[in-house]
Image (cartoon, rainbow, N blue to C red; front, side, top):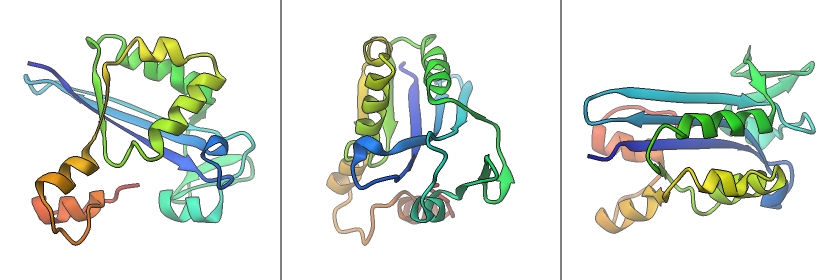
Length: 166
């Protein structure tokens, strides 16, 4: 039975071009059929150290006096290259996982691939995974007519629970 993997990226909108957006956070959870759970989470200090107000409003991340904050509290950060190397190390034990995320094709995977290319890590990363599944089109196809397909709306609708997507 395959293990399901989930991942998420937080982006910093430094410009309107996705090529200049920075990854601020990478998170992943792997669940196995035997209820074993493995997690990965890294905050990434952006270069240059700027997070737009719009991105900060969405993610809760900001920079103050050279320190990254999440909802006003300091968080430990690493460089983008260190975060991606550690993410590769996290993925390596799994047998070609499929990365699953919500609304990832329109932006997240493009920012990730651009970052991997810029660090000459694209080929090694791609050798560790089978591919991606974006759950947004799956929900739209399987459950047409919902008023919203955002993560928080879907959690509320199907699980009757609250959820903060960022």
